[in-house]
Length: 338
Image (cartoon, rainbow, N blue to C red; front, side, top):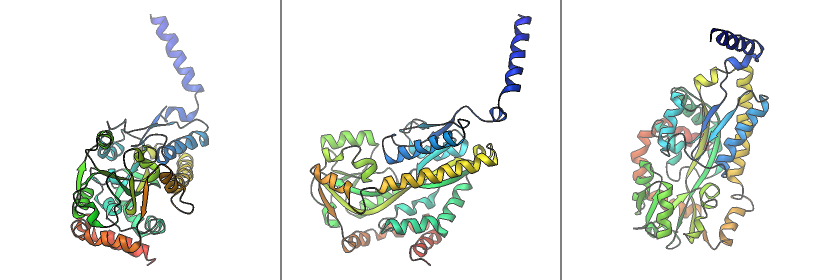
């Protein structure tokens, strides 16, 4: 036995001496959390980032994507805390899901604040974006790049929604976040908060009338047109994604590898944002696909959207102080180029 132990110890010493220098400090696998599947632009963007890091590091840094909320047992509100604690090394998370811990991220859920993609991009790149990322870093999390889930649009099985009156009494499945419940209540609907699996069953059974989600991430991939005939393009909120890393994990990499990881993040998220917006500008191929599947597509004018925004004034009054008046004002200034 003693001889065997001596041989094993010698072997371990040889491995230690011959292994590359990085092997002693780097983990065999880095965990990356995300809420959705690999087939959506969200999931595909996360996998692209992981693939780029593996490629650029020559196989030295291996990031495994844990899809469909498998790291947080489908309770997406836990994701940010897992990232903060280092249970997850990386995450590509929704600002909605991280807003319970970072209240200012509810900015993106203020109804009818962002009139265009250009307005959103100005906020992300401007003083508002810097303020938000600084808030996140206080929690031991470093943002690498912005991604995108997209504008959240409304589908239902009953009728076209053109005015707030059309929503009166309609049972709408909404994200399990208080600001969404307040928004649909202000619009006269009956908000129903439930997880996505239960929601799909409710749509099939007709016990819930409608839902709100991005076209390219949920509505098309999950074939919502099987259950709902009507879609309203109203751009009522938008859902940026944040590609982030635990600060201690980031510090464990060499300066050279940190730079490489940042480059991979920039490249992957530029691609991901483009994928999220594809078919929703220009040729509107995504909307045409929904029409081809039998949906009646209603695109609201700015004037029609304003009628909904006016009804949402109580939501603004309640949530602006919680988000931070300075954040809301900074966003409005960024959008105006001030």
